[in-house]
Amino acid sequence: NNAITGIGREWKRVEYTFTTPNRQLDKIVFNIGHIAGSIYLDDVSVIRQGTGTELIQNGDFESGILERWDSNGGATVTVVPEGHVGQ
Image (cartoon, rainbow, N blue to C red):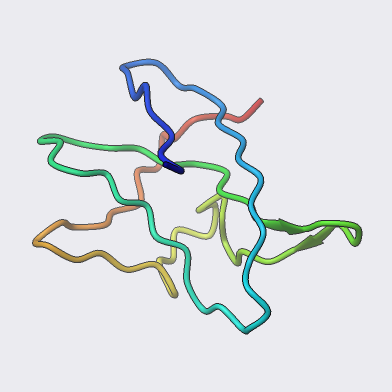
């Protein structure tokens, strides 16, 4: 099971290391499950091991543009100007 658990009301840094199959991947999915209410993400980053290359565009959401970010299941995605100032 690759689930990261323990979502709470405080900001929490979560790190997870994974290896992709030997093919091009075009998306990362955050499966939040059946949680009602708001979920906040900030400073989303995927770094290619050994190179330091950042693979996520606009993972800090600072541009206010949600290009390449999407939702499903009736959820809405919004940029909140007063987001978390990162650690």
